[in-house]
Picture 1: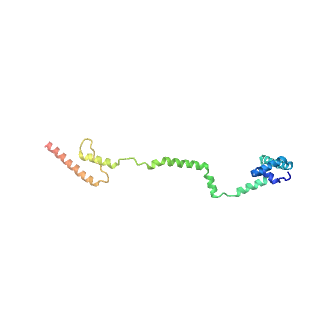
Picture 2: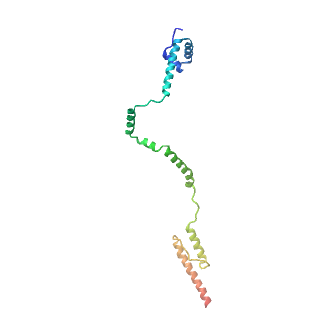
Length: 177
């Protein structure tokens, strides 16, 4: 074989960047050409050396470079969005989101529940007034209690009680005479 592959083509072959036809032809050529095989081996060794150097310990920057980087970072003021992002990080956002979810879950039935039925105080006053008007002097009767909103009932009930008192006094007087 008289033609040899150039270094760039052998590097492409080494990295698998050739088309399948060109790859097959380079493979066949490397089996029979010692010169191209030597260039291929050099490139493969150089690639391995670079990979080994990259896997080795990281290079240390000079202390002066590190100091300048740290000074530049300290002088730079964060924007309000960066500060807000720092404040509302996962440490705060997750518990707040959980509290909001629990409040929404447990608070919704409380907000939509109808109020419990109750009896107003006026009902008890009206019921007491009705019982005392039927028999104002019966056993366990107490003076009539009127609600503040029933002024007209108070005057009519007072007239009823006065009439009942008069009737009782007449009955007592008739029995004595």
